[in-house]
Image (tube, rainbow, N blue to C red; front, side, top):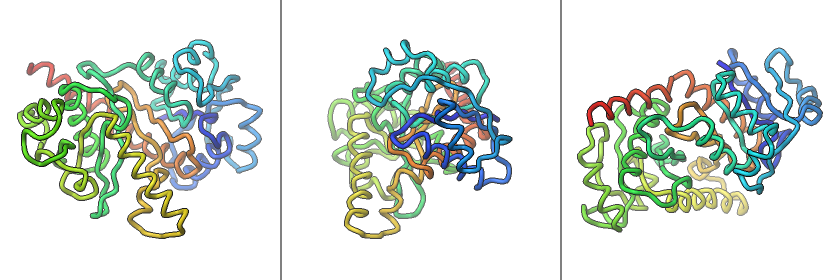
Length: 318
């Protein structure tokens, strides 16, 4: 197992990325193989500074860096020797088993879609977030920003991807799926919600429990909550603001602490052929460590292969 990591991605890279590698190596007796991608003169001194053994990683020099605000498509085209472009090239050529970056999220999505591509049968990939719940077990909310406008068929596929993620990564045996809406009754909501409801209700692979409201997000009513990316991203940023407000006001609450995104690392791109994990631009060492652990879990569970098998089955039955 080899996990590649963009050492130049993120507001606090490369040092926080290096510190995250150190945390990861300290956390496990049997670490995965790490392939670190970045500018050698910037990263190597930090690896030495933080005592990261050279036997624990391979290094690939990437002379270019895609800035956080560069146009994604043009940047990937004009900077083929950037850490993100090289990371996708190595993943496509099967030199690595997963790719992680906290860099330009647009470039990460463009690279994923055009280099790795989606699994057959999936109309659009999705990104999700883990939702802290009062019972102590996380749920899944998706989409959270990749697909601002959706069709009912997209939401149904998101529900299935979320179900598989909850089952195989979060270890929830029979995940309950809810459709985010402005009321519980069937027939509520906008045209998208009204058209999606019957499709979810009749889907054989989804344990659909009906509509859920905003007040249900942090309860155990549903394990997977589905919405289009516009609404999902608003909820994601709202949850992050709760954590930031309590920190500024010096309020300590064990539940609110779970809204710290660094506890989860990053978000996997669900529905693509290989594991790709996108981190927050302000990721620090803890987030980098947890992204590596998530990548490790996805590889070990053969998660993308599970998605492929399920969608092959759906195609055969249709």
